[in-house]
Length: 343
Image (cartoon, rainbow, N blue to C red; front, side, top):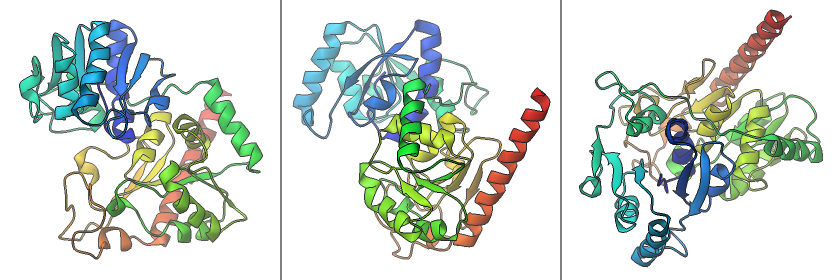
């Protein structure tokens, strides 16, 4: 499988990986260096081949180098959930005889088998349609939800981080980052200050400054792991959290993959596009009455194109805090019910 898109897309692709691994055994995956640590210990993955498309493997020279590496492995089939010319060119140049991708891809001419992309449902299930599982008309096929397969090492590292930072009891997670500035809710520091509970900030290296800003708003109760741990340990920290507040970004999909309840904040996009949370306790928030929303199918914008950002500026701290308290209360009630049933 070749999936060299953003980390959130890689997480969503684990549904397809699970289907393929059940059918064929663990799968080799081509992905970016930043996403490789997320997949290397995954139970559905045999090997990860790093493709540094923006660094050492940039341009067509990089495509040829990685394609030669793939060609030497003599693969029988390649699955291409990322609808890009670059991914398709890798499989084509590697002379993989069967190349499976979506028929609406710009690079579909390089595929040997073209699959109709379902119009409805969650993106993880739509991606899993590449495995040939039949859906009902425009609906996606039945597929397992995204899963990371966290292991003892991941959870031990998370436990060590929490202990080192003085987090000994329950906490909630906050993920203030997104690659795209237009998707970032600007009030995370105010939310941290308003919450009367321990907070752990989640994010990658590019989110470290955002994490520092959230921590500064309530330094007695907030600890930031943004940029301080890898993606699997971040996922393990999310797994331990009572709930996570996040933009539409990779952290949302990490929470989905580890089963943690989510309060997801949507600005330029909407959950109907298929990238929202799917858990029974999850909530999504957005400013619905704006005529300019949604403004783009993907929300891949650095700033609001109308320069007002009301889709997220207008989402109040009180609204988000109340939603978080509701999710935490319902999650605790569900755990109590589970404990009672076990007893």
